[in-house]
Amino acid sequence: MRLLSSKRYRQRQRQRCRRRIRDCGAVALVTKRENLPGQNDDNQAVRGISHPDLPEDILRHIHAKMTLRDAARAACASHTFRHSWICRPNLTFSPETLGLNRNTSTNVITRDLISKIDQILQSRSGMGVKTLNFDLQCCDSIDFSYLDSWLHIAVTPGIEELILSPPLPTISVYNFPCSLLSNGSGNSIQYLDLCDCILRPTAGLGCLRSLTRLRMFSVRITGDELWCLLSNCSALVSLELRYCKEIISLKIPSLQRFHLLDVVLCDSLQVVESNAPNLSSFYYSGILCKISLGGSLQVKTLRMRCLYQANIVWYARHSILSLAPNVETLTIASLSETVNTPMLSGKFLHLKHLEISLVETAAYDYLSLVSFLEASPHLEKFELSIKQHHMEHDAILGGPSHDLRQILEQRYDKLKNVKISGFCSSKSLVELTCHILENTTSLDCLTLDTTWYLRCSVTKSGKCYPLMGRDSLVEAQKTLLAIRRYVVGKVPSMVKLNILEPCSRCHTVEPLV
Image 1 (cartoon, rainbow, N blue to C red):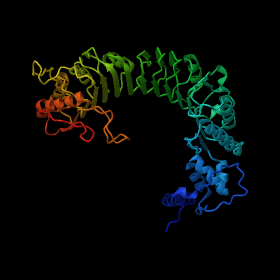
Image 2 (spheres, helix red, strand yellow; image 1 turned 90 degrees about the horizontal axis):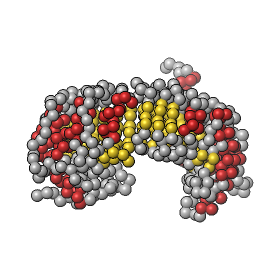
Image 3 (cartoon, one colour; image 1 turned 30 degrees about the vertical axis):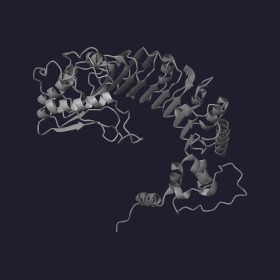
Image 4 (cartoon, helix red, strand yellow; image 1 turned 180 degrees about the horizontal axis):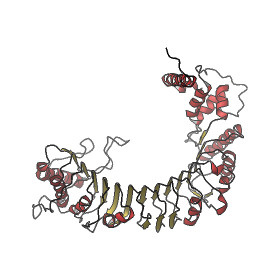
């Protein structure tokens, strides 16, 4: 038998140990004791703790995977785990991880939380962490001086992830101490996630040379301050901004590794300008503003959700080619469309996946979406979602004319999958569907969903949400009749047709006579 090298032998041993741990269950290693490290346990016997004869690195791995509460209990009952506790790389502080009872008063929760965090950090004095997470949003009575003290103790050189959700602002907002990142700690941070605080970086902040991911949720920071911060993040890969209402002008420096920008509902935003040459994904949600991506040829994924504005589909047809000429996945969401999509000469030569979401588009001519299909010769997947609360469209049933409009013959020889959610009896929508069927030689699957809600099979409550009203249910029945009359006969034999009706489990559906 061939002898294994010592390195491969250790790897085999670790694999066997992990299988034994998985089979036996790591939870069996934890006692039921409630006290944390640092409490007086001289008069309390520790019984029932045992663990297999495993290598120390495996035991440390197990301990690191435990919740903070269970890891602290185990450390009270085992010298091995006590040592592992001192070296624990990840700390998450919240009422849940500390085992605090949410049913008690806020003052009691705050008092106990402060006490336990103090004990844990004191027991680890001088030991650094890799990941530090403070989730304290529900503890609105914590004085900010405690948070300052905890951060100065725990944020040391070597930290890689810092996630901070301070108490929700009532009278004042927590001011994040930027000095934490100026003493060498900022050099090692790879992920910074800040929520509900004030951030005022200055030119003396220092270099955050390892930072690759930055996320800000409801952070008070201006565009100039953000530029100052980003200019010191040469390794930054992604930036996520949500509800940062002080930013008027967002400018991204020429960061070579930067490839993802995600901006959500920054209401004061007027300008988005990126000079990052390798930006590949841009997600934008909110009121449309002036956007310049530097003509980046690398942008492959573009998502624009402007549910407070109309005619975003029209804007996309006119402007997306200049923003991202090589886009491959395009998602557009619009409040409504009062202007039909124009036929233009520009082509999306690389577009493979197109998703369009429309809300309340009674007067819109869905057949005009052919403009996107004709401009996308390599389109493989087309998804259209329609949400209508008032059925005011030009219905194909009972209308003045049942003749379907025809568009000059086009061929879509790459399109394979088409899905229309919220499919209704609108004449122009039926015309669009028939046009696709008659001109797509590569089509594999067509899905027509007469609803747009979340079905009970995927919701946590086990019920469809939101429930459809009576008018919507009647419209769904009319839609089914229109599909049978105008669509089914045009479906080629090699195309799979999926017709989704309202859920009979959650809705009482009366078929039309």
